[in-house]
Image (cartoon, rainbow, N blue to C red; front, side, top):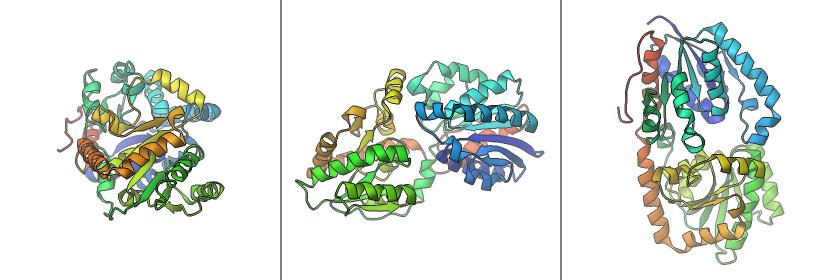
Length: 386
């Protein structure tokens, strides 16, 4: 085909990683006949060149209050993006996750009479907070690419062409070398953002101190997303008189395999921990205004994606006010004292993660998008194992 233009928008670190892999797969499938531009991060810039703007440092914010504080920035960037799409005139716009920005962008593009195709990769979880938006999305989008199997029917029922190519974590985690699980090792995963660490890591340390009253042999290692967070976590360990807690940077996946049990902050890490068979408890705390607004909007029974996929509580969840050291220590003590409960939980986690599909997710997603780059063609229908 003639050289096609593709404009991509990702606003978070995970979206940058997945976006770069998608771009590489698109180029491979199209034999290099695609030109890229858009917004992303360092990985997408490396994959697409200078026309890809790295804005992740400013864009990757979480929580209503945090977004409101940067309202002016996002308003300016939104207008600039609309102008950039109009100037670039892409054949396809690919929106990657980041629904607060990207869903509004899709609507604004259609109102501005953008005639190209719009595909969405890493489907927004509107099924959790506003299913009424799905029919509206069907009028704006040409293709939805979802990463959980139950999402496909939800979007297709609205008339939106939808494919489930699998979950991209399958490719990423399947390439991680295996390591041996160790006895009496507690893995702590307080999140990748400073706000999360400030709220959740002290809770985890207090629970550890309580556990050691009955399990003095228990060791603990915490995963830090970067060295800056690692330094902050070491200070918190000193303040809690727990200097023997090891802080590791960049070794979260190995720690999920090594640890006997764990505590994991809500987010992608909960799915990663499930993949590696780590028996764990989920914890979640945000600013109270954010929590109360979210509670009013979210219409699902569970927060953790493992429980959502299973349709039942596989992993124990301690959310907001329930996330207290005593409650967390009690759940962990139960896992420590009963190997049969840990084994049963590991079997359930394995069963759930089998729903995520097979390796090759980005390649299948690229093959679904490719026909949109060719005028007049409709997207392919593919499955997780195609």
